[in-house]
Image (cartoon, rainbow, N blue to C red; front, side, top):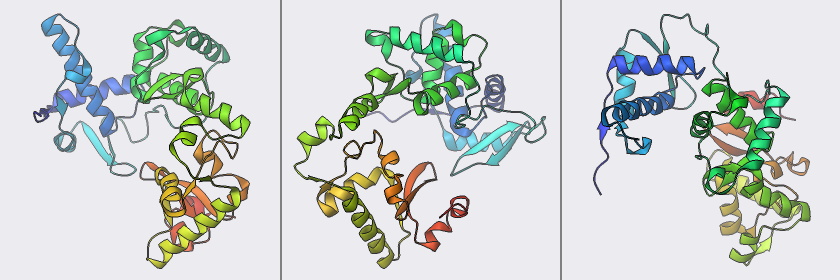
Length: 309
């Protein structure tokens, strides 16, 4: 397999990309600048060849070199963000003077007629048109490319926020095989149907010949796991993505959120029955399950520690 081809952008190219993100009301995080630079490369290639160009065919931008360019550029202000992320804002504007769209905000500030039109549009889609790219940003770009009249006047950042709300609150969109699709075609919709019936999803029944975990089982297994982690000197925090595998491998139980009446595992693990056992938190870009009885673990999450009961 041929090695991936990387390019290093110039300061002028990076500043142009950052300016364009300001126009879209998107905060210029490093990962977003990487995408925008490749988009600009695709536009340049289309102009050169006078033919459509696939974004994925563009050379990759070297992320380490990009950060070095941003730091060296006097027109940009580089600041560390959560995790290993950083932002590169325009130095000519005072810090925090420009308001970007908060893509993770749960505040829905969009008119109801926009939501109604969007819902009707999604209901009308058929065949290949129901599939959107799996990322929030890429899905929003595709929606903007379709020039939908009810999104007229909205920036890419605002459409990205709408995609987030449609996934997390409005239940207009969901995921299927790595793609974003109208909710009625999504895996979450299928799981909701099983949850309503209190049954495990079909693939879980077929794949695992194990006992389904009950609420008492979950309490017992989580407490045993946290205790084992404490004995090994580990922080009592379990990545949400590992919870089901832990139950299968260590306790020979299948943890099925739909049997418990929930469509999503993170919702089941926040049930009042577990409030004195565990709590979900976000850490370095992923969700983790914390032992609520361990002060040392809670100290890693001061914002949550103040709300512990």
